[in-house]
Amino acid sequence: MAVPAMGSGLDKRMSEEDVVAALSDGMTIGVGGWGSRRKPMSLIRAICRSDLKDLTVVSYGGPDVGLLCAMGKVKKVVYGFVSLDSIPLEPYFRRARQSGAVEAVSLDEGMFQLGLRAAAWRLPFLPTRAGLGSDVTRVNPWLQTVESPYPVGFDPLKQDSTASAGSTDAGEREVLVAMPALRLDAALLHVHRADAAGNGAIGGSDPYFDDLFAAAADRAYLSCEAVVPTAGLKPDSPESTDGLRSLIIPRMAVAGVVEAPRGAHFTACDPDYGRDEGFQRDYAATAKDPAAWEDFRARYIDLADEAAYRDAVAGRSP
Amino acid sequence: MHLTDRQRVCVVALAELFRGDGEIMASPMGPLPALGARLAKATFEPALVLTDGVASVVDPDGAAEHWMPYRSVFDVLWGGKRHVLMGASQVDGFGNQNIACLGDPAKPKVQLLGFRGAPGNTINHTTSYWIPKHSRRVLVERVDVVSGVGYDRAARLGAAGRFHEIRAVVTNLCVFDFKTPDGSARLKSLHPGVSLDEVQEATGFQYALAGGPDAVPESRGPTEAEDAILDRLTGNT
Image (cartoon, rainbow over all chains, first blue to last red; front, top):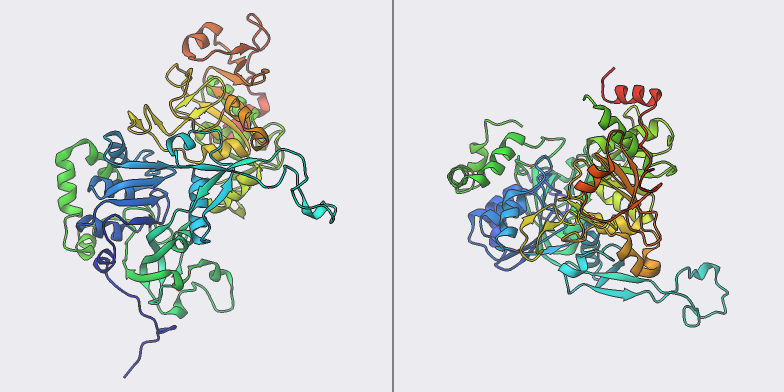
C-alpha cells in the first residue's frame, strides 16, 4: 500500500467549518494580509455563515473587517486603517463605526506591528516614539508612556568602564509610548502553498505581517491555494536558495491547514490571481442599497460551504 | 495625463519639498506628489530613493534596486531616512493633520482611513502635506483628531520630539511653511494668479506672511527643462 509522503508526519488538514468550530464567542482574532490583499476570505466567509459573535478583530483591515461588521460578528476592531485599496474607505466598517455598532482601538500602523511583536516575544510592551503627541493616546486612554532609564546620548560602548550605567548621568530621559502586547487567541492567514503540517510558503512581493500574526497568536489557522508535499513547498530548483525566503510560516505556530483554492477571492493573491475589482465594486455598492445587500448575501454568503462559493464565482476572472 | 499650468506650478512646489534631502526614501502619496518626487529626482535630488508603490525601490527606468515590503518601511521610517508627502482630511495652523475621522472619535460623524502611519511618520522624520483643494473644510483652526503631529504638540515632547519636522503644506493655491518662532504657519508663496484675498477666504487658520502683506513671494513655475521632463513623465511628448 502506498503511504503518502508526509514530511514531519503531522497532518493538520481541516475544513473551514472545522476552523470555525475551534473558535468561540468573544475571542480576539488576528487576520493576516493587508487592506484588500491576500485576506483569508474563505475563513472569513465561514465565520459569516456561523453563529460566532462578539469577536475582537485585529487587522491591517480590508473587506475581512467590513464583511464581519456587515454580518454583526464584531464587538471591537483593532486597526491602523481599514481600506479596500482601490476603494479608499471600507463602507461596512465605516457604517459600523458611524452608528456606534463596534468599538474601536485605532492605532498607528507601526504601533500595531510592535503590539504584535511584543505578543510574539511575550513582552508586556515595546517602547516607541510613534503615537507621542498624537491623539492615539487620547482615543486609547489605557496607553501608557515609559521613561527611558538611559539619558539621551547614553552609549555604553563609548562609556568609561568605571562609570555605573545611568545612575549618575545627568541629562534628559526620553518619554516614550509603551505599546502593549496585542495577544491573539487565534490568527487566520491565507498563503499560496502549505504542507499538511502547516509550513506555509508566501509568494508575491510582500509577506505583509502574516508571520507576526502567527507568532502573536495562541494558534494560527492557515488557508492556502494548494496543499503540497513538503518537498514541493519551495518553488524553485533544489540548487537555488531563493525560494527559501518564501517559507515564512513555521508549522509550530499552526494548528490547522485548510486547502482553499481562490480562498482569498475577491482580494488580491498575486501572483496566482489579482483582486476581482468588479466583484469588489459590487460588494462596496451594496452598502448603498439594502436590496442589493440581501441579494449579495443570498448569492455569496448564505451558502452551504466554500465549495458552493467557488461555484458561485466560477465564471469570474480573475 | 495632461497638466494645467497651475498643476505644473504645484508639481514644482511639491518637488521643491525634497530639495536638500539627499539619499533618503521619498514617499509621495497620490499622482501629483509622485510626479513632484520624480521631478526632484530627475533634476536636483538624483540620489532620492523611490518605490514603485508596491514592494520595490526602482530606478528611473523601473528596474528594481531593492526589496521594500511593508515591514521594511517601518525600519526605514523609524531610522529616519524618509520624507513622507501625505494628504490630509484636515490640517491646522501648526501642521497637525487628521486622516482618522471627523467628529467625536468614540462615534465619528465620518469614519476616514484611521491613523495609518501618520503619528509614527511625523515623530520620526520629515513630513509634508499636499492639499489638492484648498478650503476652510480642510485648512481648519483645529483638527478633530490629531493623526500627524504639529509643531505645538511636538514642542511639548522634549528630546523625544527632536526628529519632528513638518517641512511645508502645498495646496492648489499656495505654499505654507512653519518658519516662525512658535512653529505656526507662514504663507511662504502664492501660486501665480492667486491673490492673498483668495487664500484668506479659503483658510481657516491664522498665518504669518513671508515678505509682508504686499510682498508675499510668488511660487516659481517650471523651467523649460522641467517642463520637458514633466512632459516625458506624463507621456505628453
